[in-house]
Length: 203
View 1 (cartoon, rainbow, N blue to C red):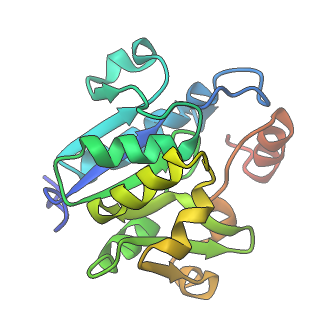
View 2 (tube, rainbow, N blue to C red; view 1 turned 180 degrees about the vertical axis):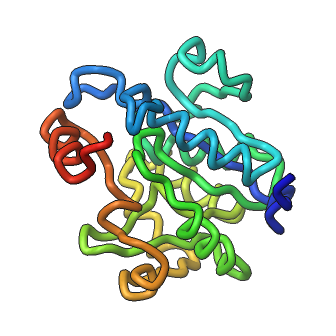
View 3 (cartoon, rainbow, N blue to C red; view 1 turned 30 degrees about the vertical axis):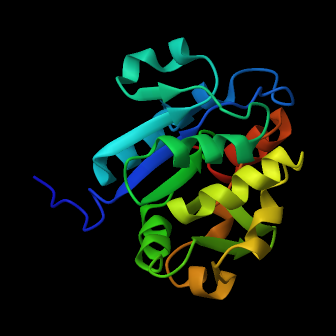
C-alpha cells in the first residue's frame, strides 16, 4: 500500500467542472486521453493524494459514478467563482485546484507547489503562457479577497494574485521536475486535441 502524502489530511482536492466546452463542441471532461477520460485522470491523482476531493460546478449527474461530493458554483459562470466555491466548502486550511480538462496533471508539480504553501495565500506556477491558476495551491485566507472581487463584478482570476501573498514558481524551477508544455497543457478546441494527438500518438 502506498504511503499517504504528508498533506493528505490538510489539503482538499478541488476539481472545477463548470465550463461549457463551447469551443471544443463536446464535453471536454470526458474526452479520452490514453484511453481514460481527462477528468478521471485528475480524479485518480487527487483521490490518491487527498482524503477529501470535491467536484465543483456543472451538472452533478455527469460525475455521479465517481462517488465524490459535488457543489454547484456559488458564483456561476467563471473559474474564479468555482475556486471560491471550492475554498468555501473545503474543511481543510488549504486546497489544491485543478481544471477538469488537464490531460496530464502532474504529481511532481503538485508536490512542489504544496511544499511551498507555508505562509503564503497561494502558490502558482508561471510558464511561458503566464500564470497557471487552475493547477495551483490556495489557502482559506484567499476567500475574502476573492469574494470582494466577485461582488465587485470582476471575474478575472488573474486579478486576485496581486492582492494576495502569492508565491510564484518560475518556469526554470519547474524545468527541473518536468515539461511545462505537457504538465500545463490545456485543451480548448478540436485543433488543440489534434495537436496533442500528433505530439503524443498514443493519445
